[in-house]
Length: 548
Ligand code: GLN
Image 1: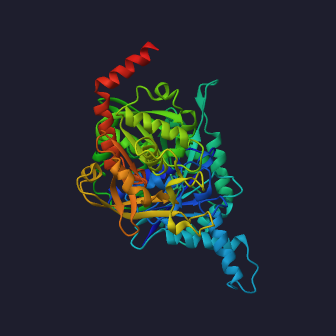
Image 2: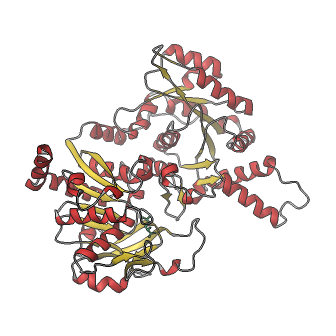
Image 3: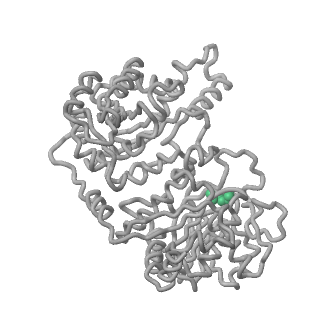
């Protein structure tokens, strides 16, 4: 018997529904329950793979090669839930399934309509989202109550709940209690109205999670309870966190959300859940031994969400050493030989993330060269690794014209070239080399030492790759191929042994880092940055900046 929790949001977007959803999963898993998590997105894209990171944040990649909403990243970082392509459905994927069936004659004689055909398809996706053996399936509905485009989803979850006993389904609604400076008080009206919207559709929330900057008073709780028809102990405050989003599960347990879940689902409740690992994490994050500054040189620097998993993984790596990581976010196009010292001077490490297209490539190469020549730890991921290979080819191996055919299809030295499997690909959605592939790490390399094993599985999202025709020349010049995907003979990891940390990976290790299990590459990178931070070279740089 699987139970279902539907999480909706009201008042405004960006309330942290994904994190609240993930936090619910944490507390249920602490009760020994098997949890699944799914996101239903009201947009028409079949998946988020074709959306700009500027608008929608990063495209997260699952183990099974699905290009997903970044909320799936939160789910994986917080919980043990199995996340894959079944964990997401969009208006686009639902409609395309229905239309495909209609063309095949699957609805012969019928008029195909939003209700019941689209809503039925949504319900099938919900069932698919909860693999066999799931005790509790949590389903987050994207968008805000009252949006036109989320209506079919809300109707579908209403119908879904109707078919189950009351104690097998729960509706959680996340709202905002805005604080008005002028009157010095928090307001409950937007919450009342947003719950009103849900009730119009026929959904009575069982739990309200109220986001607020300041504590909610008991008076407000009873007011919300009365106007929204939700028992007071089911009105839960979620106040802004002090240090890290990883406090949210602890805060929500303390605010009584765990008790509410137990009561509603009539779960066995002999002992309070043991949150000591999260408490320990909060303790370490709140009391760092110091700070370390890392430059992130990328194309989508203005939007934090565009590199969400990268920043999170860096923070995890820092926390592993009990250090707080500060980011110096630099737009790659701003980097040039003349100003690189000014832009990067004083940082203890450089990370160049993934990306696409020409814009910023020059600046990334310039930043990487600066890091290599100055012994500053540098970490290249995907396009960042490709830029690292180009940097080395141009400045060390004597291949001045080294380029990627992504940027110049007819370049003289295509050191990075299109994957063979990509040559006939014309469709853009879901057609890159995606998901987890095996990589054999070469004995004696830094990468093998960091991972402590020789066979790894990491996630990919790319079309171009290191061109094996240049491998011999680059290796002779000192760029070690440290990891190989043997089946396709692809170089997945490169490193420079004489450098404290100059390492690039074709895959995306950031998708596998968790606060309770930081990724070894990020831990090692921050470790190298801390060593660099303690050197006279770093002190000298800092002194130079102060004299400027
Ligand atoms: N644009 C590069 C490629 O497709 C790198 C992709 C990425 O960084 N995710 O190979």
